[in-house]
Image 1: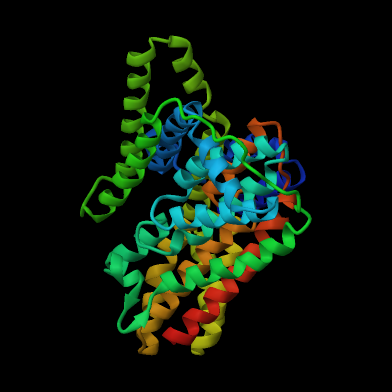
Image 2: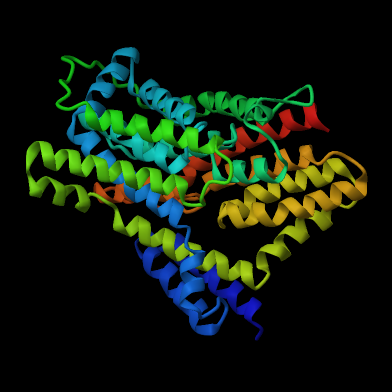
Length: 426
């Protein structure tokens, strides 16, 4: 049996195990990753294996988790929770507002960083109201993924498209006399509000903040805001290192650790800070990076991309439809970064043959590939992070639990973006 077939079988088995037994997720991923190396599906060169891991993402998550620990300790999430509770009449509107807030932040910084920043506020709200945080955190995660494609700096795939198509920051808003992908994404986000009203209509418990929480320390909040500002600034600097975002998050995390120790001289608090880093989530992502590179190296990603394009033929509408919905499907199960990287040159070739501008297919690809990750709990790094945070708090989330929220979000938002882009760009 050829390596491509073996890789496909192992990849499918890995997902079956994760769907049926979510507790075995880490083991399933790492067994397949090790098998890929042992069988030669991925090169057995240690330096190559290390190179396929996205250290930028891992450093961003690890660094932000450290800063978030001090952010939580400062009681700022509790104060923000009080403010949000003051603005809402019941739990349903609290969840909706938190979701929209997460999406707005995610349009300008990485989705994972957004979840790590907003989730503590959601957890503080749920603790104050004595309700399960599952719906809140999953809504924050999927909304974060949804709006990542809105701007050049919101998601890795957006950065890839901007670099490939030579698009600047403003062209995501307005390009060639037409509204850019920002408006397609934002309209999709707006359309998810009725979805959330239906999903969470039973959450009618009234809310009130009561006495405002007193914040103990402002520095962690300044540090988190510093991460946001630095990530945005870095996105405008050309030719930055590939790990620039991770380096920013880690540097600010180190500053937070040093500041806390110098001020309090409490080694135990520093130990607790490092213990708060979710190692399981980082290991899950590490394993997935190896597995995805394995199926990419044997050509499975190329095959999937070619299958989508070939099915469209010379009919632009059929091709566009297949690109969007095929991307939604594939991105629910595989990392959208290698998929988008593979598809961009293929779409360029196809549109050159058809003699048309490629932007309608570029934007369709980005819409489908970004939103598709919302269908499953392992379709996007932000989802993995949110589920990991819930598990750490004693709340296990199955594939079914996640899809009850992720699937309606995806269908409504993707359909809205699909129609908007076709109307303005075909």
